Image 1: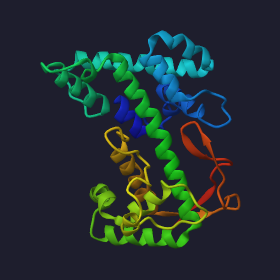
Image 2: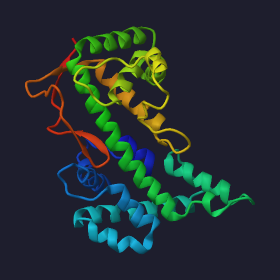
Image 3: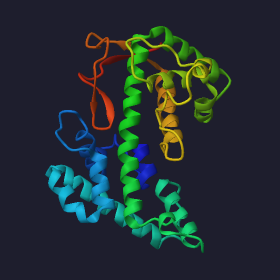
Image 4: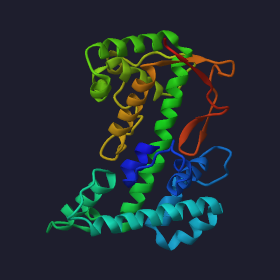
Length: 288
């Protein structure tokens, strides 16, 4: 969550500090995430974002369909994004930020100054706000779900987890953890194989999705991030987040089955993601 808030909104929030959990931006985001659960009764989130931001004349209808807490959360995110965009434009020549919003503003400036710019290549305020909120919602839920499923799959496949831990140990014998973690997300092939397995429909036992196995399948049979010019804009960022988290955890700990661990795992489609019907329960043990 900290990284998503920083990348999408340029907002530095320490979730483990005393003020972190009470951060209004964080509370609004959590309200929206909770609404995606299968038993929430809330309408499809992304449809409502489109109605409210891209079809302003239907904004009142979207508001009517939303529970009050959810509507208040959307309104807060919308106004926060609007104020942030205004401030960014005011300090455009004095401060340069390095986040998703700044990239869009730079693109807007580049296209807006072009003689060939058209309406479709210039962002409006609503476009910018929608992209920020969508990045927040889509980025957090999907990444956290993948990490949860990966921890589950590693717990019920200890041989796979052992091999992954060995691959990490071997790599960091020759690389500093502080300086080499990012490179490891690209260099350790087995780590990518494990993550790709978690991104498939989850069977009760896993078969690692190796490069040679990919060659045996049609190119478009595995689409965790979509395909083509409108594939997921956060694909590389999401994969980096997932792999960095696994590297950090598996340096010292391992996942093991608990008495509550459900095998096979029952899943339901909740909101935009495949969710565990009864939750995911695993234990974390020290590797030492």
